[in-house]
Image (cartoon, rainbow, N blue to C red; front, side, top):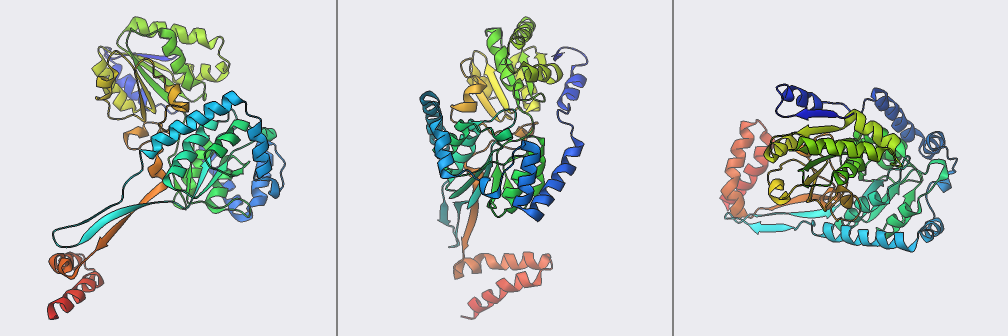
Length: 434
């Protein structure tokens, strides 16, 4: 059973604080394994990738089979039904339209001294996009990673997707094609991250790696950060639903299970101001778990990490939500917009009873690659900006240098950086002698 908390209880603060520190993944051996995998791929390139793919994905490949050929891509795309193709095309269109709005603007101005200042934005040259496989494969993740990269202006995209036992999801391949990606490697796990970071004879090195994955992928991204950029270290999925009694308990139950079915370590939390409603939702979850296809995954997630929290009012719910800083936050209340205005920390907010989190996973428009494990306190979901970098611009006229240069010389001398000061002072001396 999930944990039950009531904000009116004397021991609530102690129990809630303990709940916030619950560790949902405990794999101390993962980092050591990943370190060895990365070292092996750096040293042996394709040979190591092929051996590791055979070991973990039970797939024997040659180096010339690591990448999907154009004919293979076309063949897989042709397997997709018209209905599924239309759904993917609609999702791609909506995701692209949303992310175009995120494009930043270059700026330039001349200040009162005559100095010209500003910045310009540019895309990274190459990005590697990791798409999960294994328990489930996600064409939606291809769209959510590749489309923002293309909108940002990234010219070269490399998708890596594991194909355990040689099983390929045609939807993943079509999603890549719809996103403008032609380079797709059938590689997963830490070896895929290592190959993207350092390059092999077959898989090109990239400048930035994005996309969610399991504990091995997360550990690999952490280790290669600095050699390449990464989007974030993603943990197990999570959802917080704030709901009043004016909801159908079964709706809320399946919303909670929509994240629980991702992973046994996923977390689903309900905060409500009505204890009877909380009990009704709990009963609805248990009923759904009797028939849910992925109940073997969702059941342990709900049992081990689920929570039902009762509060006196919805203002208290927003306070607790900010302390949780959830990846996904549903506001199933009469006035979701007002309540959302009180929320500071959440990866994505879904407003109202007819906006389930699942709509955001596929077709809403905003990105579904979001900060987990309370990191929404200081980070954001994937966006166009993750594939861009800002370069600042400065241009001094003689008059501008004369106006602000002496202060810079003073500061350089105060830090005992003589050459810094001289590089400015020599120019000032020339200007003063003219």
